[in-house]
Structures are given as C-alpha cells and as structure tokens.
Image 1 (cartoon, helix red, strand yellow):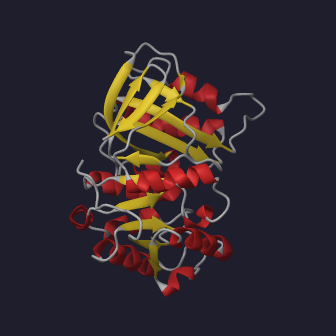
Image 2 (tube, helix red, strand yellow):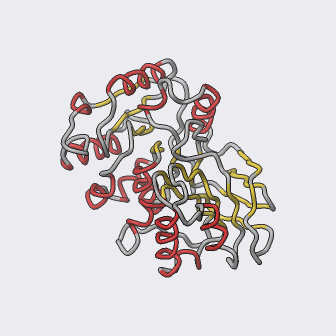
Length: 295
C-alpha cells in the first residue's frame, strides 16, 4: 500500500462523528489537545444527537464524505465509536477514499471504515479517538499517537504470548483488523474485508466468552481463517467467565489449537486506557512471540 497523504505539525485534521454521540466536555478537551500541534476543524452540528447516533444517517454521511473530498483536510479523526458506521458504508465510494489517500483514525465501530480504507488500498490508524485524547489517554500513548499518525511507516514491535498450535513459527502479511463484532457484522455483505494473506488483528469489549466463541465459529465456517497468514489478539475486556468458568483465553486456545498459522495474544490495543496505536496497511511479521509492523 502506498503511503498516505503526510501529516505533520500544523496539518489540518478534520473531526467527524460517524457513529454514536459523545461527552461534550471530553470531546472539547481532546480538541484542545490536538490544537497544540495541528489545525483542527469540525462541522458545527457535530454535537447533534439522535437516539444512539450522532445525528441522522444523512448528517453523518455528508460529514464523512465532505472530510474525504475536502482538499484542505490532511487526515480524518473520529470523535467516538459506538454504533453507526456500517450504516454509512453504502454511501461512501471506495474510489473517493482511494483518490483522497487520507488516513482515518479511530477504532471500535470505526472498524467498518478501516475495512473500506483497506479495500480501497489506503492506510488507516487504529487508535484512541478525540473524546479520549484530552485526558483519559496516558501521555505515552498520546505521544505514540502523534508518532504513528505522522510516521505510519515507522517500525513498531511487541513481545506477546503465543497460542500453541501446529503452524510454522513465522508469517508475514499486510496488517489489518479491528473490532471482532464489527468485522463479524460485515460477514456476508459486500463490505466484508479482503483477508487474503493478511495478519489479522482483533479486539472487543463486553462480549462474554461464549459470544466470542460464536463469532469466531461463524467466521471460521465462513472461511475467514483459511485466508489469513497470522492472527494477533488484542484486548478483550468486560468479558468475564460465566458459571462454567470458561475464559476468553480458553476460547482462543481451543479455537486455534490446530490453526495452520501463528497466533499471538496480549497486544495492548482495544477498549483499554493504554490503547496502543496501530498502523494498518503496513507489513506485519510474526516471528515466535514477536509481532513487528513496518512499511
């Protein structure tokens, strides 16, 4: 994948709210933090709330399409996740995303956009969003946020745990992924990701072990795991075992015990305070317990 439109100090960031409404104070704190380094713009109606959406589908769709097409905007940052991005996918042209070649930055429900960007051949960043950047995100993560956004081709590496199976010790492929539930919701639709040869990253929140098992089973039976080169498991939070005592770690160990690709776990990215920024679209390599992502 080609490198995206560059972002540096003074670049113009367009903030969008494509999913759920958000805490206004937290959002404004995040905007103030971003303004220390960048020019920041957003629509005046970004604070609109309509049920569990940040305004109507038409409002949110017009906002994201303007941010994509506006030549003065260097990158797009999402205000918050929640739910709503998948509803917008039919109204966003992959060709427009490709021509603009801008990073989109966010996670959780924004996984729907990561999938579209990836299909369009454009890089994206899985990272904390505006409503978390003002105070709840630790300073080292915010520093790494800037580094990853401004240098999406810079090398990053993590020492993780390995799920035992009978695969080869290493694998390489384009790095891509996001929220498991959102990826699962795209299964069987025209917006399902192209996973051929990819190193897939997944995370989630609020999903009990049996529900994680159900999603993984569905994707496995749909052939998703026949196509990937490797799997990196991120944070799965608020998913405690039930009375049966089965944990999410147990689910992954069972699901991938005979996988033909390497599986590493423990990547500190997802619905956690220290949500590590991840650059999608670069080349990832799994060597033993090391995950390395570079250009």
